[in-house]
Length: 98
Image (tube, rainbow, N blue to C red):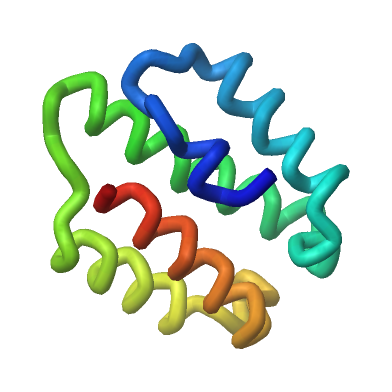
């Protein structure tokens, strides 16, 4: 399972199903095992934020992705994010654009 599978049909999923798919991805995909609990919570918060926007009919643009990444990059030390974590979060945010 990949991030695109988690964010697929974002508008039609409830928050419980979204969290369930995310946790399943974390268990089954070894690529994302480096994310600790705080980083997982951060990613779930980003997914929830984009889900709320999708429910209102607002699509994610490239500008929104760059803006979110800029804020994460600025606070990366405070949040404890590595560059690998930022790459994975960027991949997640890019998957919202499709």
